[in-house]
Length: 129
Image (cartoon, rainbow, N blue to C red; front, side, top):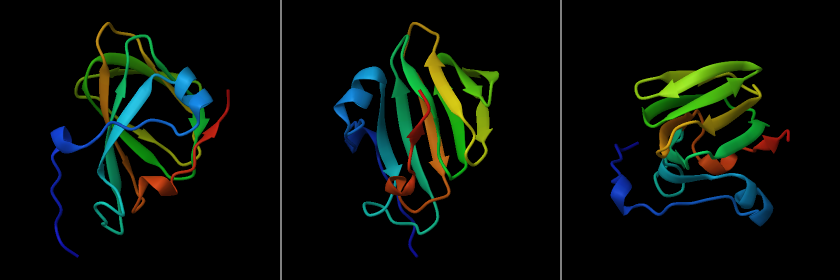
């Protein structure tokens, strides 16, 4: 296995393929480490951007997830408990935990997300609302 470096500025923004989901979720992302582009066999990581006032609807997925907030302000409701999202905050989301993220600020909310999967495509989102 070899080390991998990516430059976020060179990567395209992505969103949900389902147009209905894309319309009700103000989130977009860049995949920084994810097979097949950057195979690790172990992990995937991306940069998410949630627009001001935007919501990533209540959902869950089998793999655990880690958020690390770069900038902006928001809230993640994790299994019914609200957690403030602001620069420097890291949040562990257990497997199958129901969570919703909301941008409560006036600027975009930028969050690094990490999954213990080789590819982001292995993460199956189940929306609960």
